[in-house]
Amino acid sequence: MKKSDFTIGKEFFTATGRWQCSDIGTRVVAAFKKDMPDMPGIPAAGWYVGPPYAVAEEVFDEDDQEGCVPTYEEAVEAWGEEFVAAEAERGEVTVPALQFFTLPRPNRSAGVSKVVQP
Image (cartoon, rainbow, N blue to C red; front, side, top):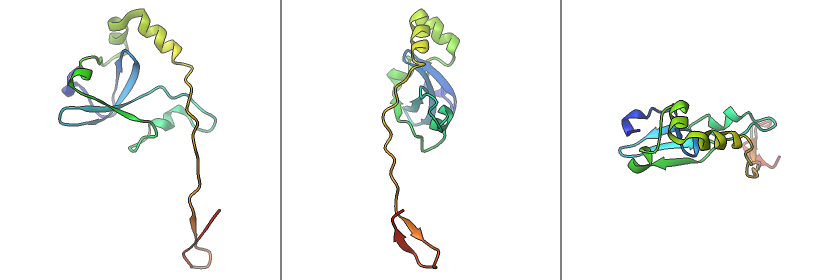
């Protein structure tokens, strides 16, 4: 693919899987990999709402863009059985441990903007 073939929000494929274009620059394309599984309370689609996105974006320069195809069918044609097997294997993705924390919030019950710990 060429930079002009990419559209923000549209999916494309590489030998490593399915990606979604998130930004287009002067010479590069930014995208994130769509391989996050559903987790209790967090559907997979929730990872891809943004910007900002909850997943890391990667940059595709001119050389990387040449290794991209716009459809799944073209990916299967380009990479054959290895691509299909790898896609099936990716169904089991290990998610890194997420660290949640709570920020102090203002106590507005008395009309005072005093910070209290929850």
